[in-house]
Image (cartoon, rainbow, N blue to C red; front, side, top):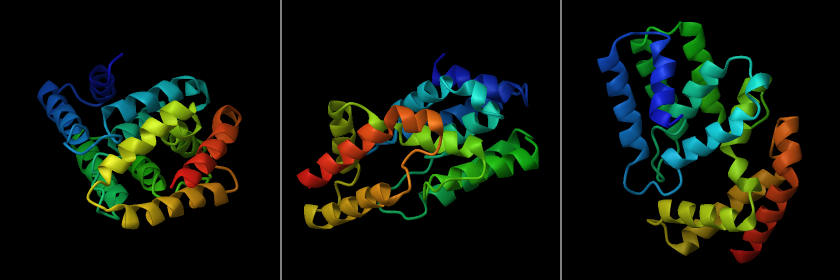
Length: 205
């Protein structure tokens, strides 16, 4: 199922207002297709859903996690330090238009905010979201390299002497985490390769 259909199906559980759903989808599509989005785009969402499909039965509220995927990078500006906060706020506003229960909206908002620091959560659903978000780190090195090049393009306004120390800091942060991946499934699947990939990238910087 493509992203558009997936989003529409999610929304139809809450409203029959096709015009509203169409407007909400259009906004997501437009945001993720902005010029300058070389990695944080619709392909990234596609990949996350592909990863989550394998663990769907372990996720207690797949609907909430799905909305979190759609909105977690809806606001993305490489120069901003508050993308996650802005994305969460946007999600809260849009999901209220669908008349989704406030408790569920709060869960989705918290999940989106959790993608800022990628710390292990008490909520296992959140951990699955975080792991899907970082799954690219554990792919084959060719895929990983392509990802690093796309991230570099997103930060192209920064010259190397500013970008490289910042990138090193991010990578070292990942290596300092008790484990990059929070769930057993993703840890087993990607942890070892992710650490190898990051170590290789650090040597290249």
